[in-house]
Image (cartoon, rainbow, N blue to C red; front, side, top):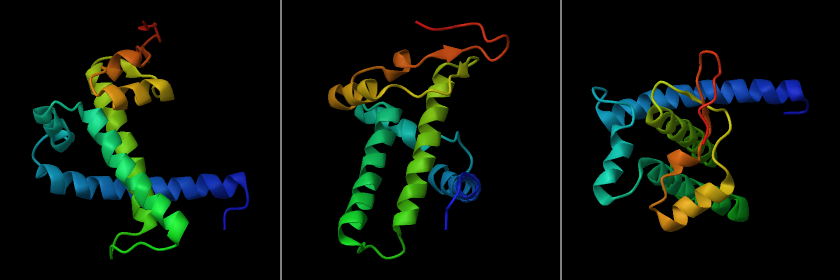
Length: 147
């Protein structure tokens, strides 16, 4: 039971450890273990879909599974629990953040993600370069690199 901030932090730590193991295994399975960690997501460019948009679309699928579970109390697909869906969303966000970090190679990804409006616009238009909407700062010396 999570009854205090301390319990929540411990729950978060355990969840992140579990997600780390999942992302290692899935990364191996989806990339063959021999290519970059984002290879399967970058493949969406073939269809003209930005990899981060692809990740957001996959996340929406997971959100729908979670919604179904909340509404119905059950899921029909065996071996895929609602906890799995939550862990997948966590890992998708890490992958998206990593892709965006690499888009600004040599610069530090700011801890704040893009605003909700930027993401919504990108999803609707599917042609918005959301990398331009993220504030970045250089790691060393924290000099600003913002628009």
